[in-house]
Length: 549
Image 1 (cartoon, rainbow, N blue to C red):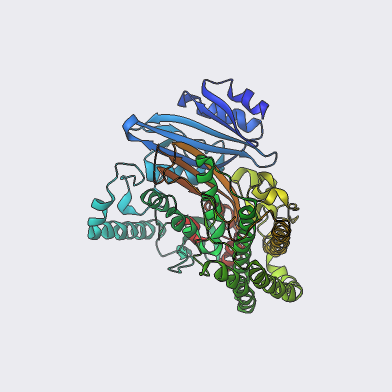
Image 2 (cartoon, one colour; image 1 turned 90 degrees about the horizontal axis):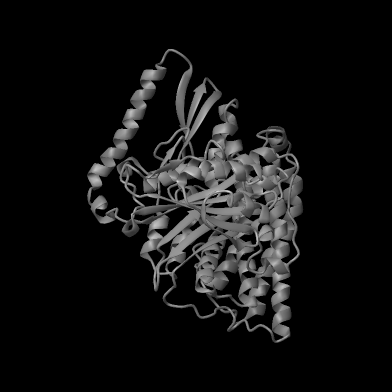
């Protein structure tokens, strides 16, 4: 990390300091130096942008822009800050997207919600928000949500008008004489979130794709500001219900860091178990859903059957199967009054998986149709992963060894034996097969954590009835923290800002990997045919709830 600090200190900085073992935190004095700093860091291997997070300080008339930049190969990361003027006509800074393409959608989101203009962005436009928010920048502190919501009819008309204008434009530019047209493709489930892919085709052949998201945008980051620090867990777990436990771990860690609290060893191992349960139930959906995109529903039913056993375990612990709210700052929410009974339910779920996994591999993963359609299709290499910051199973399917659980261990992962689970080819088939391999890894981690808890109880070092939670302050000190976890789809990062004696977050940035993975559809789908969309889309393991957070 010393080399990184040397690079940063060549520029005018307010400070350069160690933040965590794999992170350097720095604040740039002059926004005009940003591009040169990014170029210098990129040459040193820090070539991926995890996210961009503005924080609005209206009383100080400034907007602080936070860049989270990562070297995912060598595990060296930079949290870079810079202040810009808040007034809309001066709220601008150079875009880093030409240097780091992975910053693309994150800059668009910051522009749309905070009004930060990124000079030199290749296609600066409104993103994620609907037309009724254009030019209003709803995440600024002075945005009047109540007044906006009173204008219901005007807001609906603004959204409708945008679609009519788009339709008329396509009519004018494409006409009806040729075979070119624009098709609207996408899942439209009202709960998990719709997504529209604007697919520009010439006959069956795809020429261009523009992802359009935000149909059920929930402004979760703003909702977090309205809740107290415990109530916020209800918002963060709704990033995506398919794996709702890991977002809660991520958020809780940020609160605990600012509060200066460390949870008990028992709670750390419980977070491993609950986190891997969340990963497993999510991966079972991804595994079965992949075949569903090809029209093979039998395998989806198999996976849903197995998933029920793991949901039973979550229900036994929390009282809920999906929205569990089972993790909060200070530990885990509930004690284990009868840990042997709960571990027994866990073992039943594990036994169910073990009883079917060989059939799953033989019948489905080696399925000839899947092999013919998915093998050597939609390949990503290491360069693609770094340039676009592909995360989690998508990166590991391309043999890129990245996993927050190992790179920056949290909870009790540093006490357990685990290695990177990877595949070699980076094609569509490997993006399916990696999910199967990761379920097996999750089972192993759960079993290791259960054993550690049993040993701790037998040694008198853990009390499952009392050690689940430590006391947290009712009011938080002023502070700032970054927390990362390995979510089912890859790195999840949260940036939390608190004010002195606060009872609720001042700012909570939520970053999850589906944004970058959706962006890849622009590159992945052209030159394929329409029949390939479900297969390739399904291989990216995108969660629409994550997109529309």
